[in-house]
Image (cartoon, rainbow, N blue to C red; front, side, top):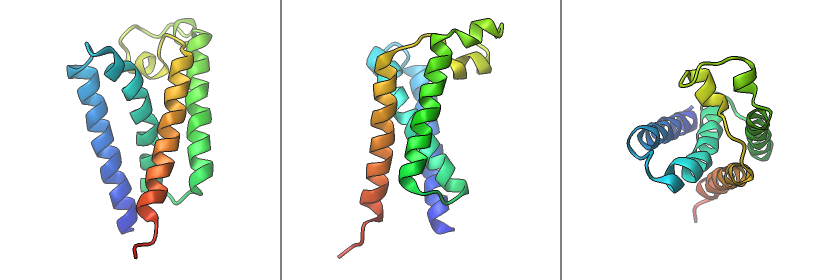
Length: 125
């Protein structure tokens, strides 16, 4: 149970950073676009582990696949097709613009989350 609290705290911290990036650092292109995408996959990883115990590699893979599905929705302009209002939460979550770079950032975030998790869980000598 203690470990789940650690994941929840990490998820809350990552969410706070994401909000900070979206509200205060939106003019910093790299931070807003790339770092935000890396961190959001790490946020999802921590959030999932805060509520249930998953096999780590499968969890990271599932988050990457989910992230790619969201990116595919952007490619096919799902938000526009559904008539979601610009600025609405649903439209922000789905997004508007497809980018291969985003997929690379999602992969980097999943690998970073998994690597940090394995590193932090290693036996201490």
